Length: 369
Image (tube, rainbow, N blue to C red; front, side, top):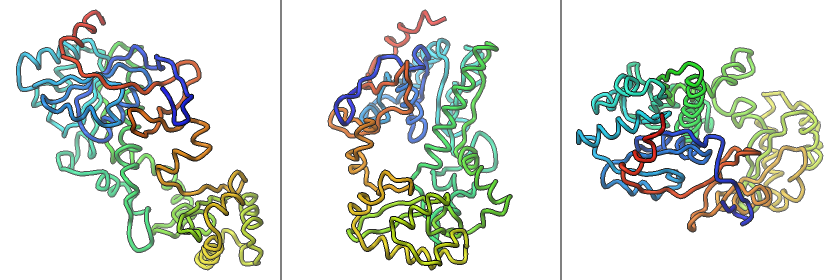
């Protein structure tokens, strides 16, 4: 694998080499989770609808073997069940009940392969009043308290679909599947992993529920230290129209911010006085507006102020720190994030997807057990 700087090389086998996963093609968090598992060396076979090979084109398709199947055909469905008999894990992201109606529910598959981990990715979960309703990331994080806490004072603002789909969804699915795989090695028994985005997003809110319990968090946007309320934690516009971010929470970091920004007024002494935050934030905004982002980078970047420029995706790929760590790579002319996290002995690898007939995959897996 070649990074954006052209030098990063990785091995062919990641830490999950030898793990075999069958994915039923979907959208959003399921494919992202399977991309990460494939990057880490798992052999992921994605079963897609006949004629749906367009899914091969996305970044999240990397590293997988793609097979087109007709699950309404009894012969094809039988072959899929046979393939699942030699798999370590299954991942699907349909609404509750869809796999059961296809004749591929957990009871059927675990009866065929008692060791398999059956990963289910949904927004609302496998049960509950909303389980069968449609939804998207914004809806799943709305009922957790997360969306209400994110945005400007006047209204919530969706934080892309990072909190529900990928943070609370894909990453919790990965953790659950890997934990169940570890347990299956000891017990010889698989199980169902019910990964719901509303569950994961709620879990991600743990620190804020903790802060609320101790009185360090009040409900309402731009009123707390980490939600844009504090003058020392936020993003500020520069003279050029670009933005910088600061997170000068600790007293020593705050002192450096004051030093480098010339905040000598006594009013800035009361760092944690919530009542003073709006006025101090307005004053600090005027200071940052006095110089360009490039000028502030020369003054603050690399110090303990806890400072960084706010970059676009293209700018991020060119930043010297990101280039030195080869955080991004270009494959087939497409800029994309490199695999993460990093492993010292069994590094991950971004690989091309490969389209194969089901028979070829079945043949390579037939001696699995």
